[in-house]
Image 1: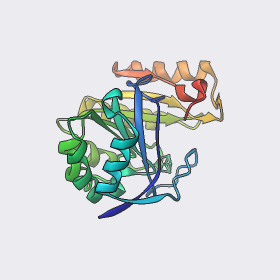
Image 2 (image 1 turned 45 degrees about the vertical axis):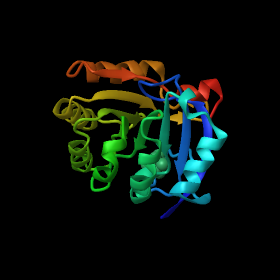
Image 3 (image 1 turned 90 degrees about the horizontal axis):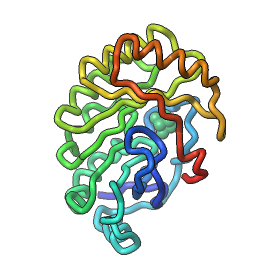
Length: 217
Ligand code: SF4
């Protein structure tokens, strides 16, 4: 089987609870969503077989020096059939970290045995039932939820996120939407939103995109 990879690079994770760790990023092409804040070009890339991708990353990088390999995109679960063959080749060398928009609940079971950590989005413009179905599949895997928000976040959004957090015992990571290197909301607004969450659920943190401050990818 073959799939398209947009880019492979070593960098520092800038989002969520593993912020600051060195990761090898494998960015897969394509996405099933079109978020208005998407800052990634994942449209085109190089086609690899599982063996070709394994050879590329093991000859060009010392995988043991990374905290984990980040499967990112785009939406990496669009390549789940490929990953089902590829991930057993690298399982055990370092951890496997999946960054996903948490909408393809039928794809995760194909690869969940190989995943160590899931960074799953909660998209405020989507029906939370879509994410609920996804989180049901995350059972047994270290999972946290990332919530990108701006001034349009509503009390209903907050309630829905908290309900998902409570149901699946998720750490919720609030991530202010960025415009380049600047947050699109004020620090006061961030505090206000964090207070609304923590009034009803304690497992919540506010973490901006640190890689933008570090000026790395
Ligand atoms: S899910 Fe992620 S990669 Fe896909 S459009 Fe939204 S922000 Fe971009």
